[in-house]
Length: 46
Image 1 (cartoon, rainbow, N blue to C red):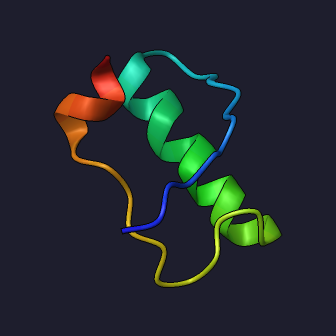
Image 2 (image 1 turned 30 degrees about the vertical axis):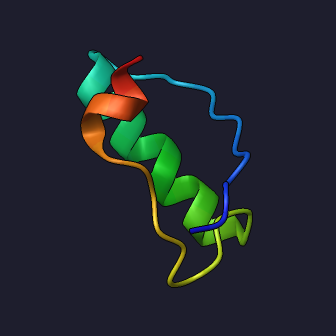
């Protein structure tokens, strides 16, 4: 699996909401390509 270097700016009322919004925005703007596999949640939390 390839490593994805994606820098996200979190915003919103909580970490979960901010992460979801940032990932959606990255997909919408093309910074996160369709079909890109993301690391497991536990890895993202680190």
